[in-house]
Amino acid sequence: MEIRQLRYFLKIIELKSVSRAADLLHIAQPALGLHVRKLEDELHAQLLFRHSRGVEPTPAGKLLQQRAIAILEQVEEAKQAVRDFSGPPRGLVSIAMTPSTHPSIPIELIRRSAAALPNVQIEVREAMQTTVVDWVKAERVDFGLVYLADERPDNIRIEDLMQEDAVFVQGRSDEAVSSTISLAEVCHHPLAMPGLPHYLRRAVETTGARQGLKAEVRYEIGSIATILEMVERNIACSVLPFGAAVRHLSDGRILARTIVDPELRITMSLLHSPRRALSKAHVMLRAFLAEILASEKLPRRTLMPVCAHDLAHDAPPATVPLAGRRRLNKAS
Image (cartoon, rainbow, N blue to C red; front, side, top):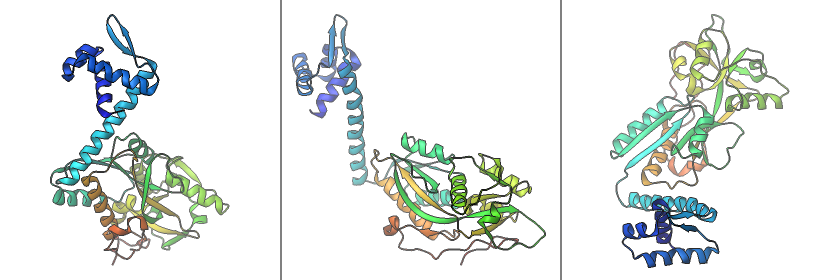
């Protein structure tokens, strides 16, 4: 089976005529018919119905049509990927992130890309974790940047980039509170959390269950912005990644406390489809992301070894700000 035979076959089905396909392909009709017969002999199946109005694919022909389209798309992607590596990076790179992502990450990613990749267009989308995973699987975006707890999505390539502590967030209070809080105490506060299977909810419930604890999730809220507003108004507390709450913390609108006994760790991971070839632009964007995570002042994060080759300038972990401070401390 040859690539050109698949192209010929698809053109015949598109035009519903061997003679019209032969004219368009600039090939003699008997020669084109011979290519079809060779395919049928090799596959031991009839591929086309011939009738007075032209030709139609048989069930076997429809199956080959679907596979041939996918094969030719992969061939074109492979050609484009090789061309990209032989010249300056170009094209569109799309990445989807969750609302929990630290706001400096997409901003710094765009800034670095604009300076180093002038011919590359960066598209950043935002959606909840399950939607980001679906987009990556459907190849609607090139990359997905998400937090994961214990779950590992199927049929997708996962690169763990960093681990960090989730933090307990609560409204401001005149009473002094410690900078840490046990998971048992967290479970006694009324919480506003996303519903299952969201990674934050899963992390709280599965970690609590190991300790014989059950969280009091009073409000199931699918919007991080709404959760933060509820926390600020002292309607409920929550458990969030530091990045999701950083703006509210820096303005002194809410407090963050490190969860201990046990710690609640979440993993930031980069997702992409195993069927999609990575161009030079994709590879460079992924390297920028690893460098950003190595240099940004993120709380108590541990960089994962999968990106060790990109993290030559690793910085020491920062510390979650103590509850009760008016401003967010800068990490050293």
